[in-house]
Amino acid sequence: MGTLVEEIIGRKIGQKVAPGEIHLVELDYMMTHDNTTPLAIKAFREIAKPIRDKSKIVIHFDHAYPSPSLAAASAQKGIIDFMKEQEIENFFHQGICHQVMIEEGFVTPGSIIIGGDSHTNTLGALGCLGIGFGSSEIGAAWITGCTWLRVPETIRINITGKLSRFVSAKDVILHIIGKLSSNGARGKCVEFGGSLIRDLPIHERIVFPNMSTELGAKCGLIETDEALEQFLTNETRASGPFETFVAVNPEYEQVIEIDASRLEPQIACHPKVDHVVPVSEVTHLPIDQVFIGTCTNGRFEDLQIAAELLRGRQVNRFTRTIITPASKNIYQRAINEGLIKTFLDAGCDIGIPGCGACIGRHGGLLGPGERALTTMNRNFTGRMGSPEAEIYLASPAVAAATAIVGKIADPRDIDTNQGA
Amino acid sequence: MGRVWKFGDDINTDLIIPARFNQTTDSEALAKAAFCEHRPEFAEQVSSGDFIVAGSNFGCGSSREHAVIAIKAAGISAIIADSYARIFHRNAINIGLPVIESREVFESCNDGDSLEVDLEGGLITHLVDGREFKIKPLPPFLMKIISAGGLVNFLKNHEISELM
Image 1 (cartoon, rainbow over the protein chains, first blue to last red):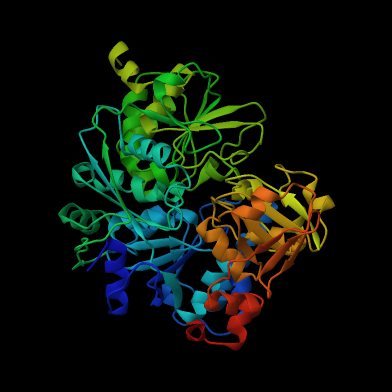
Image 2 (cartoon, rainbow over the protein chains, first blue to last red):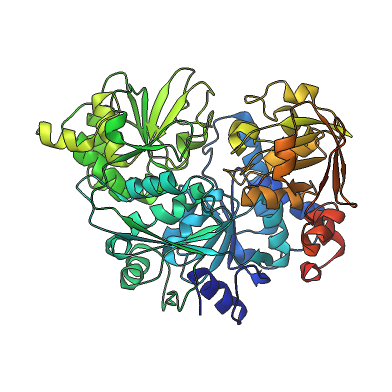
């Protein structure tokens, strides 16, 4: 009974729960990556008690892998030594942690996963309660197997309408963040529903819980359905039967209705993720770097849209265009289906699957005075290198159009004005 | 008593410590990088016992615990903000860094003012004009973590179920 988050926590502990209550909850998995594992190991060593169940520990190398610096290399060696010593088996360097968690079948409806990464919310698209945590608490959970959770209030967002060509989930979530602000769901659960969400394929649904983080949300959730079951069965290693989760007589703190039918492509302007404008307001801005990738928009279908626009065209010669598939699986499929050839022919550079340029550690840093348009989820000052660089956020279609024009561009103009 | 370092709204984790400084777990090295781009003078001039006073959504962005460690190791003895991002707030408590919520203090303080914070007595005193502000207490189970000096210290001597 209740909202989705109440359903998930309630079923896990075997009693009805309500917002504001604090419960000790058993965890299905605890995830960290190369950036957050070292401090988890430090906490684990200081507490100095044994790991409760090592099969619940999942470690990814994705933030700066392969190491771009001596410091990163030595931190990663420390993690590898720890994994050998503790015989940790769930170790991946297959791409971005959230994407790989899904592909490898760790993420199933009703599971509770804490991750040493703020975008762990991503997993909520699969009916899993994914929540971002700091490292010490994850190191502690390796020992205890559980954590305390405050049941959050829920904001329900119902989205209706049909999206125009080259308008995608990314444009809708940017629009929502612009309306609600980066503080709009601080500490709350955001439930995404309505006919538009139901009609979207899973790879696009994922964008909503992923960027619920940018609303300040503790978690973002979507109800389970047949499409999700098909996705889990066909595109991940998870095996059913899968539980179903829908809100039952929910009491929401707030219900927001969004009609996305007339939405045009949206841009979040530097340096505020909630400073969102229609693309037509910023098409004059020259762009030095386009980056397509990340846990928000580095999936196969995102690359497909970019390839559709870039096929037979050239990117602007002064607009460095970097395409970084979210995982090795996606990379492999993009090679097999000719997308990588399309990108190379168009003059793009291909990054190693992982977080890449998104956190300013490697794979496309920005110099002072440079301006990037990216498919990332965050545009904080200094995030991609120089604090004197600017970051604009958009969809893969806008990013590909921008790469061609060399200024922020509307993909609908590319499509109608030129034939490839 | 300590000096007030005043910040605005939405101070994110990249402003607190950019990702390229997150390759170490050494507290002192992290402290040196605190606010290095946003307020380059901070790391050099901050003294032990100083306070950060900030607006809403302090610490938004990444889950990186390096941000709270850098602030604590720099000498900050408490943060007083209108509100905090969820993970940052939890991280601060987990390492035993007091995080106090107060819109009033944010509105009443200027950068460079002096404050006295009495956590046990639940009182903040503005040492320039003598005004006093009551502190909203944290829930008892969180106070258990803070009193132990953080989650790691708590778990050395207790089971997690003892929090409840």
